[in-house]
Figure 1: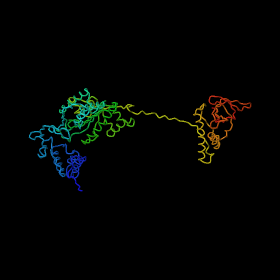
Figure 2: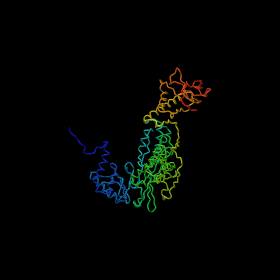
Figure 3: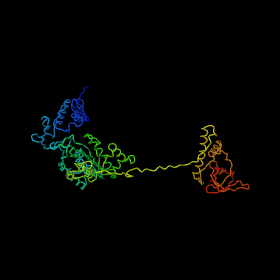
Figure 4: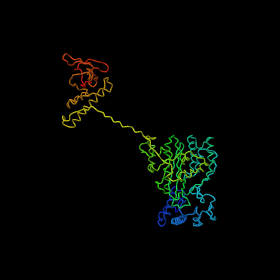
Length: 552
């Protein structure tokens, strides 16, 4: 048996993309110590598979970085070719054999290189002459419009930075409407929906007019003098939530340049949701988008300003998340982990650029909408002239849990009081007390089982008995074979008694209440009237077992 080993990386394996990237980064890690930080950073952060995109502050730094990266990767036998640049001097410094040879640039011009067609850079068309990104799409629509065909056409629009969100959200909303109808993937759409899709497809060629700046700073001013800050706008409607992130560069001379850096729009859930909750969802989306921009541009989060036209969101973020329902509290916690309440400000809805991403725009309209591409006009002014945020948090906010007042009741129970000094041990005292409680529980249970006797509390004056008599009284209520009776006593109206029956067992004796007494000539009561259930019977006191001596 012979074992064969690949000497080259095989294209098409599952691990091939990772191995390709890892091999290049390994070269930079092993041999980068002899090169500048700019070159090492270019390989570590600006290289994606076989495409290298690096922005340098000056022409000299760009030439130096290109040469160092080329030399560094030669240690791994990686030779970079097809170099392009928006600067003529940088192109002249690159050997002609390593320049792009697709006839896109010509150094014969006296000024900048001329570009006949934009070149795709990671799927995005870049016009190197004007240093702008463009979008070129064909207007052809599928012959038969189905869910499958329109989704396939939507997927051809590659917009990683979300700059086309006001236009693409229209297609997403229309596709969401198709999904709610639960039609088959290959079933034709209705005529009304077909006309909407045809109009959307017809607007695709207009996207070629878009020229989005690649560089956020002004090329005519020193790049190191710019003060960078990030402004995040969020909004929501019943159809979608959106966010737009802008980079604001302010120079010492007062010049300000604001550029759309990132945007994202998402359809709202099909299940109806309140607008304040959607606004909070949009705020969370804005925080995630700002973190993407912060990692890419190395702009500290402390320099981020967040804008929303929802006062409810501002109230929520200034409150404790524990006071709200879980669905609201979860997003509040997510936002509060990355931002502070002071970073959130209120913006009027009319000048909120994120509003375009929530309702959708025709291509002809949003292409020329300066608010979308350059942000609100007030960002061109000093911070002192920005909209003020004056809020007073109300007592009750939407979704806030209502505090239930705690009510405390003082309940006094008639307790069995036995004198501990009369017992020889703690265990004997506990045992006798348990017998007494069992006796009282049995009596109360007989009343609740439907005996037609008023439910006054049954109290046995145990404090007047010793442990032996208490245990004996409890035993009499549960032991069917016991024959001892309670000691005779003077009965009064209202006393509870057990009425023994000659043919019944002790456990089945009925419970009664004394409703009348008949004293003798000597004043002693020997005969009483007892109410048993709904009948009144006359009995001798010697035929009754008294349960209490309470006058009721």
